[in-house]
Image 1 (tube, rainbow, N blue to C red):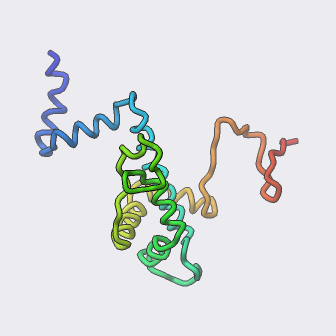
Image 2 (cartoon, rainbow, N blue to C red):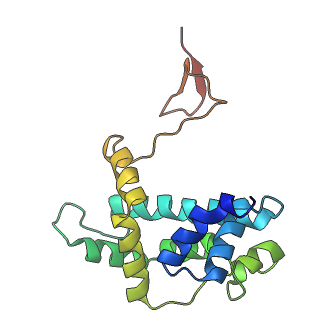
Image 3 (cartoon, rainbow, N blue to C red):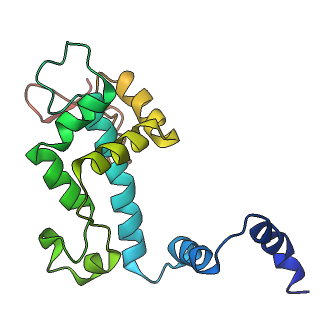
Length: 171
């Protein structure tokens, strides 16, 4: 009876030639709520996608933004900046990343890799073209290049004044 419950899952895994260690690691990432590192992993991973899409959309590192430039060049312009290097180190902890050297949980994530510029460009391009990348681009397109911020703690009858950032009550 217990095996019948998993028959569909096992059948599917056998069809796709899944590797047991990879499946197990995926399941641990999804279901291991005891470990704080998995939630940190998910947070860093999803935040990195937001940052990549935002910077490509806003052409960070590109000096002449009105000129027609290829997507690859826009990405490369950002990847060679100090801003990118800082962001990459922030969102990719690991043993060789000195920015996270005092956080043992972050060191275990092992996300940081010393990659050549072209690999960074390819990875960012893949994020831009992904389903999440396309979804986030729509948000940026409809909000003048900024992400809409929604918060349960921010009452809907109040707004932030742009010139003087303080909360103003709606009268």
